Length: 457
Image (tube, rainbow, N blue to C red; front, side, top):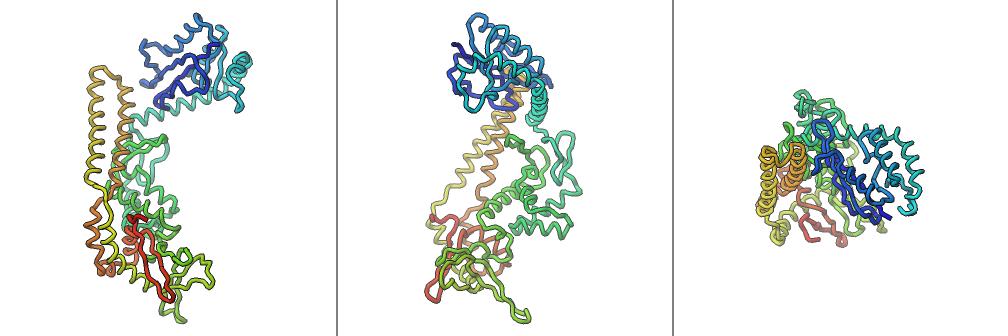
């Protein structure tokens, strides 16, 4: 029994599948490749004929007895209902069975038992032709979107807040761009999404949810880039609202905030979400008590889920804060001195060299098109993939630390530096270095132990 497979792939919509991964033993694989050209579908094959491999398959079936043809889906047989019907008729005239992977039941008995039922299978396939019209219409729409991706045009849909749709790219909306720029500046200043959301509501009467604010912060459109449904990014497609340095800082703050308990990133106190009781292993929350006339306020740190009996007592907030400042000034230089930091200069040079190599590939495409080695459509598709790879490398480069950590430590190891900061500013800097503050209890006293992000444990 001879079983062959036929694959039809549009590289704009999907990657070329591996011809050997069918799950069954296949005698031969025929593969056609489609490419969009000026809105019309042509097939680039060595012989220059439409679906040349399908034609070869039909010729082979006339000379070599073939029992069945295996395809991934019925739509692979043609671009229209009429084309699919014609190719089904060709198979029927040659008495060759057809098996579609997307029509096989979950408990497949095997291709040997399925092919003798080819007449019934083909009858069922013909009943699906009406349904296939909708699937092919959807495919044509996706192909149009794919052509826009290759040309680095904006995806379909409404432009993000702060932009409007131009002829070939997004254009900054001068009426709304200052609002979103102010939102980004607030987040960069205080490192809290909720605070920036509250600022917009108070300053501009622009009310958004916290989840919307998080999407704004992570949206590559505001960095001058486009991200498509397939996950690929193309850089520098339109004017940005954020600079590259600001975008890298935002990404770093978002990663830092994800490690903190919910709402701690926007808490008004600098120790919120950082302190843990070493006795009961519980996180500690900040409680405030006022006097009868509310002219004074006292702050305490108390465990949230203490299982000890009696429960661990609350601790004065200001005392823990002052001790934390002294400890960070003493422990941070020692911790940095004992850590072998990576050579950021060499890492940046390596990524920069990879980016330069990708750029050299892009520069070679235009001469190849001019000399006729590549057609314009293939060159556009290759350029799209190379630019996507460059965007990944540039994202890696932007996420590297912008400054020398050892040089920064000399400044933050001075107690007066911390005392001159407000609680909001102190909250920002604490979370740059401290992963956790352990409150170690000793009889009636206690001490503070700091766990830095770069600590081995």
